[in-house]
Image (cartoon, rainbow, N blue to C red):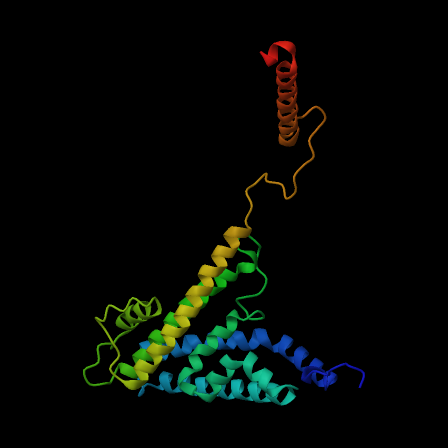
Length: 267
């Protein structure tokens, strides 16, 4: 034994390098297609008309994209050295493929580090645009949640959420955990979506708050230097002033002691 350990990621260096190259070349395309799918899904959900020809074409296009995403996930999973680590890193892709009802959440891939909307931005107070990305992701979550709950509730008996306006209003109430209760889902799929939106909303809003707080703490006022400057010649520092005061006090005490020890001091 030489004391070194081999991690699963380096067992097949060529295959792992090919996987990294493949992901680098396909991330932009796949994240862009995810946004395209979100657009078609939005049209289908708002102008719901299963009998229309355009609706059937969009439905077929959505299925084709889902097959493409499934093939991409299966291909990358096959190449990955650590299967468990791959599933941890790509949990969103896995959920949207395994559960087709959640495939609209695939649009969040556009906000991953290599996604089409989260690449290098111009640097400002918020470094790298992290807070902006989180806010945009929250908007996507609200919108996708609105569409999903609308599809789940529109034909349910006694449903409160039957149009996109009520759905968006309900999603904002849910993601912010306000919960007025004026419109609520009545079906189990709708309530399941509500739980997911609550959990994701709390996480994303917490990330936004933490990012803003960290950015404000790191920000420095203009003109403030990172290191203290040395005093110039003739300039008095606080420590010099304290030393001068102590020397003066010692002189006064010595003079007082001499007077006490003199002939008149004894009387």
